[in-house]
Image (cartoon, rainbow, N blue to C red; front, side, top):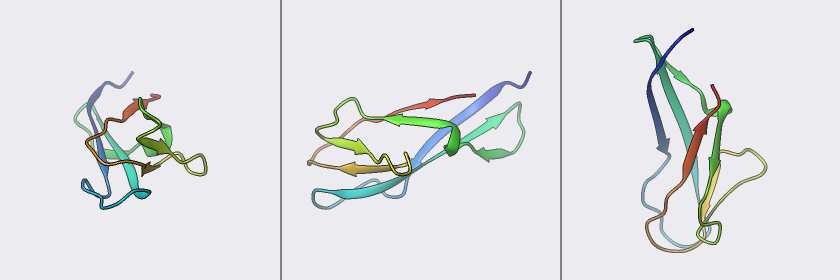
Length: 79
């Protein structure tokens, strides 16, 4: 079986202005020193504080920032 060696999540932008700003999320994985692979379709993004950030039901990769501040998201890769 292959071994996951790197896992990175990125956002289309790290600073947003105003409420209801949308940010696209992307996940990249590397296995056993191989090439980087876009694994976004196999990642589940969740917000520990849905009053601050929500994840869109339509595509599961768009985060909507609902209030100001620094926020966390959880990314689970379903390898």
